[in-house]
Length: 247
Image (cartoon, rainbow, N blue to C red; front, side, top):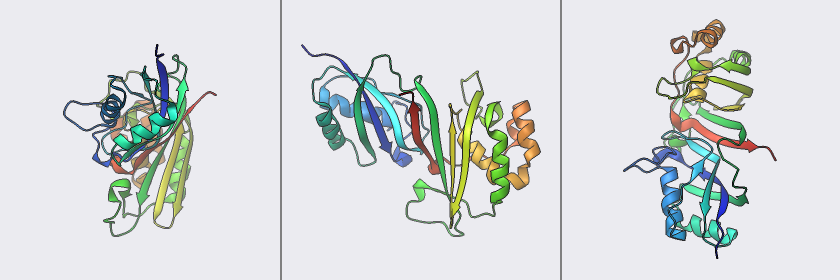
């Protein structure tokens, strides 16, 4: 008699040719790809649940997802066999068995996103789908100072796309790091959760801080008015870097 197991998977994917994480009819998605290949491997129509949905074009370094299967295949073999079936732009890096009470989304305590920018004057033809080209002047020190206004617990409604079903806009940001090395600029944001397009709007606002001004960030947090802030950056520079849980 086989016993059902809940398997946690840590997944890396290049989102350039996916229509996001969530399964959609007739479109290639990460969730759909995983479920299709797990069915090929186990002959079970299992649901893969992720720690969150990434949009079309967004990447993940360590997405966390779970699947419940009855197949008795050893864990190590499950990972090897699944990776052989998956396409080159998605890979399962780690698998472990977890308690059935564990939920990749609701059990998560902290998430870290990274946004990568190329500041070169001329855009790159290689790897352009993994970084956002931004050939404009930036004010690094002012961006770093302005980012401190976002640390802590706030109503981030102004930093959320209008296309959302969320009713609670309160989130807590623990840390924002901005690092420039040559023509590479990286934003790293850690919080207890992020709203739809929140990271991309934060990055767009900080990049345009000389135009937006710190006072409008404060006003936006108080009023929830999106038009006070900068643009929403493209998806190709965004990575889900890490998801943390209580040990």
